[in-house]
Amino acid sequence: MLQYGVNDAALYDSYATGVRGDVEFHVSMARLANGPVIEMGCGTGRILIPIASEGVDITGVDREQAMLDIAERKVADEKPKGKVKLMKGDLRTFRSEVPYSLIIVAYRTFLHLTEPGSMRQALNTMRENLAPDGRLILSFFDPSIEFMVEYIGPIEANPIKTVRRFDHPVSDRPVVMSNRRSVNPESQLVTTESIFEEVGTQITVVPLTLRYVFRYEMEHLLELCGLQPEALYGDFSRGPYRYGGEQIWVARKIAT
Image (cartoon, rainbow, N blue to C red; front, side, top):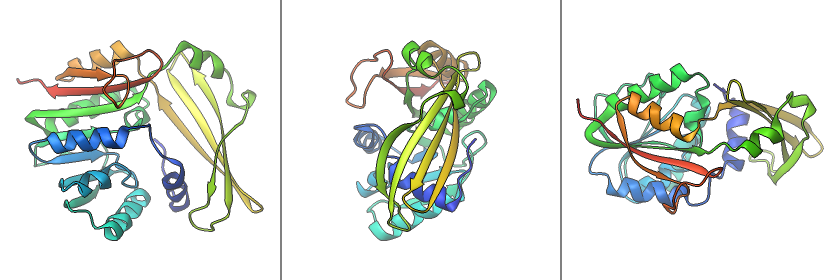
């Protein structure tokens, strides 16, 4: 799993804007929860703080202290109506004495688990942390054959594409963000090198490896780990699943 330094976390906070509608979707689900809410892999608070701003008390957990430090500063600045508790932890092993009505794992966080055993471990742990009527929300991209074919091969052989321009959060100098990818269909791993060129100064390369998951593979994983799929959406407007788009899973804890 990727580990972020202070500068990497600040860059992440500048460019990670998520998927259209994901903040509003998670806010609406949190407002419907009839008990404690937690976001695993909360990062710098992109989703967590809007939920708290609606008056919902929420816990945020992340394994990277640099991310939590930024989230903590944002909470102090924005002073949301709901209480926010930030904790360092890993979604594979985080155990809570409080059962949660809603667990959120947003924006590809689940795919950072690059071993099938780690995915099962995380799902089993989160199931144990759910209240009897609690829900788990997972969201990530749906892999397509076209995506895999485009990026098959060594990462060095694939083209570098400019994807975004923004101002550096610390120096305020212009930054050009580019990336290149490599897909290994045998291991279901996609590696991305994000290249940040701060104009006139330096280049920062941040590598990231994710393990993509197919629709029925995910359904089987959920059921194997005692979680009953309740809905699968293809977008954050609750549209139907569409191949090559998004997988947005809502699952309930199966009673034992």
